Length: 159
Length: 272
Image 1 (cartoon, rainbow over the protein chains, first blue to last red):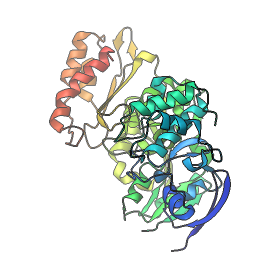
Image 2 (spheres, rainbow over the protein chains, first blue to last red):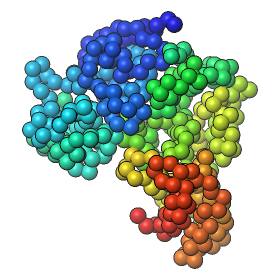
Image 3 (cartoon, rainbow over the protein chains, first blue to last red):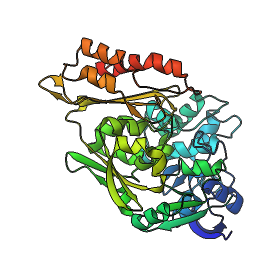
Image 4 (cartoon, chains in turn red, brown):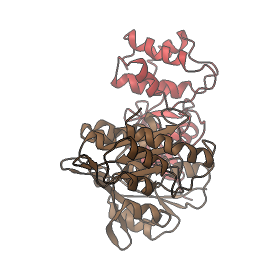
C-alpha cells in the first residue's frame, strides 16, 4: 500500500514523513521521528500515557490519526524543556517525588502543562480534574498533584 | 493492516464515500474508530474524514440549539449558553478525551459509554443524517433503534429544545472511577411542568439495555402529577420496567436493576 506524505511542526521544528494509512500519531512520533517521550499504554484512550499537545490542546496521540495533524503543531514532553534547563513542572515532579517508574510521567506532565498554560493558579480540585485522564500505578496521585500545585504556586510554570 | 484514508472538504462528499463502501467508517474525534484500528479491527478498510466547518458549528441563538456532529465536549463546556449540557459533557473521559470526543461520535458509542446521548435522548433531540439518498432528520429514538444500520450514514448535527429552566433537566452518571469511568448507569430526566404538574416527562437511561433507552413506565408515573414524594416513589418503583441490562466488569445486570430505582429517586428528588 502506498504511504501518505505528512508534514507538521514537532516541538517547533518542521518535520516531513511518510505514514501508512490508519497509523496513529503516537506511532508516527515514536517510529518515524524517534521521539520516545509519548508512551504507549492502552491504545484505547484510557491511560493518558500518550498525551501530547496539538495546537496547544491536550490530545491522546494513540487515538489521533497521524494524517489528521498535517500542518498542525505538536508538542511532546521532549519539547518542553528549555535547552539544558528542565521545565518548572519537571523540576517540581523531581522535588516532590512525583515519578516512580516514570511511565505515566510524560503524559502527566503534558496534562499538567495543558492546565497551567491556560490556568496558572489552579485549585487542587482543578489539578485533580486536569490529570483525571491519566493513570499512575506506582506513586499514587498525591505527589503528582502536589508537584503540579508547587510548580503553579512558585510562579515558575511559565511555558 | 493499513487502511485507506479519504479526507474530504465537504460533508456531502464524505457522506457519498461513506454510503458507497460498507467497510468504510467515519472518523470524528477518533476515540472510537482509532481505538478499533489500534485493536486491529479488520472490518474497517477505509476511514472517511471531512474537514467541513459546517460539522463543528454551534447554534445557541434560539430556544432550539443545534450542535454540529463534530463539536467536542470541551467546546460544549466552553459555551456558557449550553450550561444545561455541561454536566453530561463533563462526565465523559478526562480533558484529552473531551478535547477529542464529539457529539456525533457519542451517538455510536456502545455501552458503557454514550453518556451524552442519554442526555440527548431525554431532551428529545433530532439527529440530522446524510445518507446515500440525501439528508433527513430523525428523532433520536428512531436513530438509536436503527443505529447498527446507520454506520453508512453521516451524522451532520443534533438539535434539541433548550429546557425551560435549569431545574427542568437533570443528569446523573454512576461510575466507579470519578469522573472518567465507564457508566454503571447513566440517567437523565427532562421534566417540563405546567401549573405545577409534570407534563411531557422524558427519562432516559444508559447502560440499562443494548442502547440508551427511555424509562417509559417511570415517565407515565410522573405524568400529570406534581413532583412530590408519592410521584417520585411511583417513578422509582417503575424504573426497571422494560430494561435489559448486561453484566460487565463495572456491574452485573442484577446490580443495575437493584440500583436504578434508587438513583432515579435521587435524580428526581434533586439530591446529589
